[in-house]
Length: 354
Image (cartoon, rainbow, N blue to C red; front, top):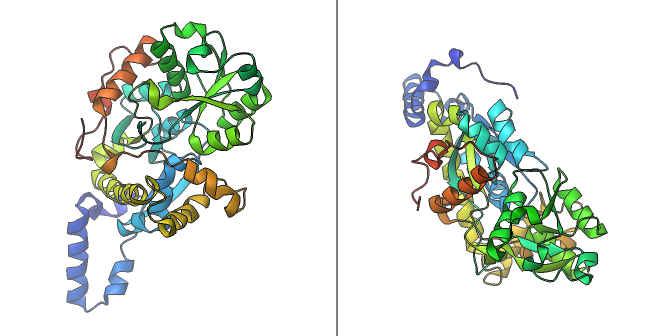
């Protein structure tokens, strides 16, 4: 990504509202039209890391509805195949924001001072679909009928220290057996996980509902439980670089304002899709531009609606759960022992941090 030369623009250190006020005052004094004055202020470029999941819907909504533009942000979405590479991309400066799960990769980069969490998003909720626990048909027929039966079986995941690894840990803790009793299989990509379970090469996995429900309905694999029944879990957070928090705070604030608007739109429609069918269909149109793009709209609509996970209001952070997650990653050796949640959560960007 080409970076701007800030030295050529000394007013960039000034607050955005003051910059706009000064520009408008100067335009008025020179008799310049509002349109010309406005064009002199270029939007700030932001690159957002995402996965093609319905849980990333606010990213797509804010982009399609112009919420980023309203905040003076020139947004670009860059897609990834797993969560950990997003953390690496932010730390390296390739992207600006990530909306995905906390991983071992995130914690280690955060411990080096590279990353900060600024908000929360997808949270498991007992009243809504979330991550499904699935068994291959082969394993199901051999007796893998419930999450408790996963003991002694193989588990598909992207990488060591991924959110999928954490969910395997949640299952082991819930049903009282050591994580070592699950044979974890790092397959690098979500698509590889799905293929391995469909073919019976791996026995089980956790999967987002817009993928899991259609797989179950098609008879390609079996849903045997839900992560929401294992305990509280804030699955994804919104994070950025420490540099952005410290030196571009106004840009982060503008990003979060746009994102909260998109979350509100999503919650108003997708948490109860039957309430306003027309609004639901319009929301599906937006999401379909990014999710299940290889399917006709009529084939994609059902899975997208089935994937309507619970998103935290106003990007609220569940601090208690973040502490539980960190403790597990530390116990498994995936996060530095001296890292604390307070060290990687940047306050002031969301109102609710419970």
